[in-house]
Length: 170
Ligand code: SF4
Ligand code: SF4
Image 1 (cartoon, rainbow, N blue to C red):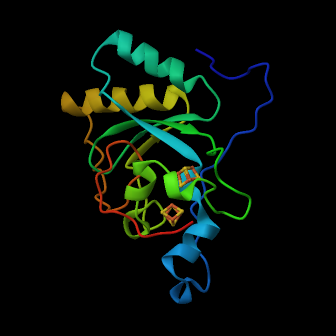
Image 2: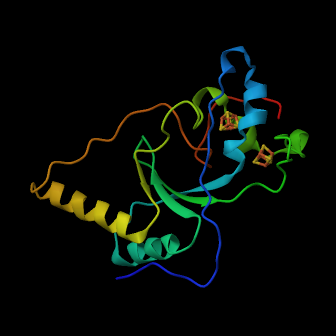
């Protein structure tokens, strides 16, 4: 099946978590002001696709521009919407800092997406997801050796986060 094409010329957004040359001398707050990577997406937990209907829905998700599915380093599935927060100011500051949501307060620069690869698998196209599940099926039946998922400490900002409070001021 061909999933390419579409009538809207919407640009593909790449999530960026930059490193800086002089970051050893920068405070966490300064790094966040320049990075603001975690203010540019929404991550929503997903179930593993056990039924054909669920998988069909996931394919539908991936037919949309700037929507991805990721499996994190703890084997949790997430639907990623690559879209910047409206409260992010051009200078990297949060315009509602004092009243920002708890999830923003909980996300910390010491285990964020900048520190390491924050996912084990990433699917941008339906074909990538279907191929992954097919390989998994073969691995289960013993035909193919399963790919090992890396264990990293970084994670996406998502509603599962229960980390410590961040003292970062953006
Ligand atoms: S918490 Fe991490 S991803 Fe978010 S702005 Fe700070 S350095 Fe960037
Ligand atoms: S509310 Fe503020 S800290 Fe939270 S995502 Fe938006 S800009 Fe970032």
